[in-house]
Image 1 (tube, one colour):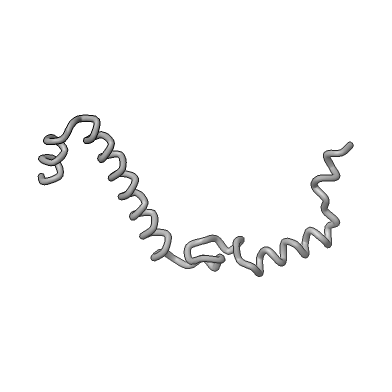
Image 2 (cartoon, rainbow, N blue to C red):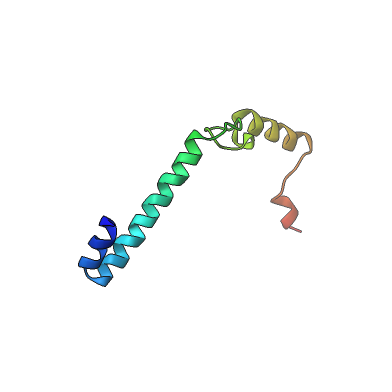
Length: 77
């Protein structure tokens, strides 16, 4: 109720602006809560997929070298 009373006392433009900012702040808090307190998937940071880990990236580089991949040269035909 306090929020409603505050928003009705200020001008409509300010109320809309503060509501939008508040919605972004709340969504950021919810995202951060899920991101940093959720399950650890083995990535570089908690909550990131394991494809972002250093081991996965090293294995990907080794695979690229073994397959002799060069994605840029295929466009020069």
